[in-house]
Length: 159
Image (cartoon, rainbow, N blue to C red):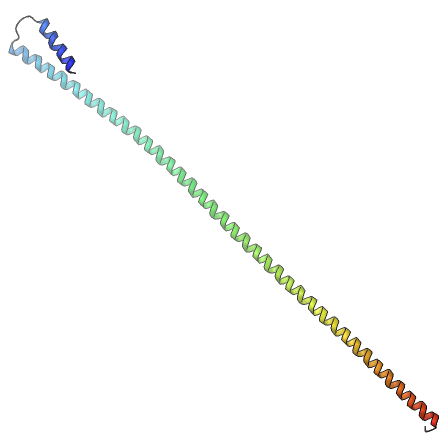
C-alpha cells in the first residue's frame, strides 16, 4: 500500500510542473483520503462478507456434524435396544429351559415313585404267595397228620 502511495506521489509530482497550491494539495489529500477510506470500506465489506461466508460454512459443517452425531446416537440407541431384546429373549429361553428341566425332574421322580410302588407291590405279591404256600404246606401237613391219626384209630378199631 505504501508503494502505491509513493508511486502516486511521484506521478503527481512529474505531471504538474507548476508549484502546488494549498487548494490543489487539499484536493489531492482529500481525494487521497477518500480513496484510502473507500478502499478500507471495501476491504472491511469484503472481510465481513468472507466472515459471513465462513460462518455460514462453519454453521453448515456444525449442522452436518450434529446430524452425524444424531445418526450415531440413533444407531447406538438402536443397538442398545436390540441388545436388550436379545438379553430378554435369552432370559425367557433360560426360564423355559429351567421349566422344562423341572418338568423332566418331576417326571423322573414320578417314574421312580411308580417303579418303587411296583416293586413294593411285587414284593407284597411274592410275600403273599410265600405265606399262601406256607399255609398250604401247613394245611397239607395237618391234613396228613389227621388222616394218619384217623387211619391209625380205624386200624385199632376205635372208631
